[in-house]
Length: 287
Image: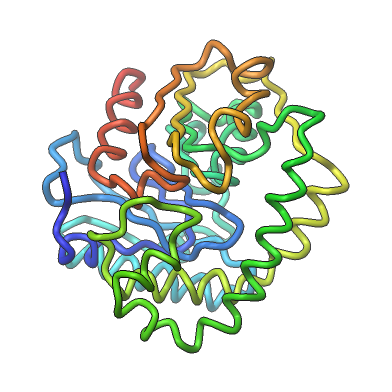
């Protein structure tokens, strides 16, 4: 089930948290500037209004531009969307009028989603390959954080040539091999944005250092809402099942677990329509 390139182009999202009625959709907080969400073929229950809240590590202007661009794309697709900066000073859920929300996150976004759940702010959580699940004695964590440093250095050299790289199928496949297995449906402009976003993310270094000092932990006993964890079996960044060890064995063995055969680290890129159904099929159980 492959959406058209045109459909994907209309759904380019920046590094953001997307508040849709009472749905929060967060992509990986570490490097990517874009993700994909709604598809015209999606037949699930629509949300009445989308509040787009960008989280910028740079400045407020970047956040406003991010939100305005995404809102324009959503409105062009017939979605009632408003930029969060018109309503929120810093984007907290309280000021948005949401005591709780259905929270969806990928990678570091999944880890953050579970922390919000532990604080009582989630009605439900769908975590797509959430970070932090390595066993305590699993040192591949170091390999993963080193990957981000090496990747960013490489991308800063490659980004000026992003359009040429994204112009070929081989180039698109190389550019996304760490996060997705299916590239045929990904438009070149999306790949260009992904490359520039990862190259320009100033937060990579500080985040890696903090992770090395503080480690990863989830106060699972305080998570009382329903949780679904989704993992691609061909995840190259957080390999299944080793990168999910503590989630499966210690923290959230009772969660609803979904394995996606042959899918990579970002299901929302690999199989966007199916991922949308996996998310809403779960959240709709808990209005």
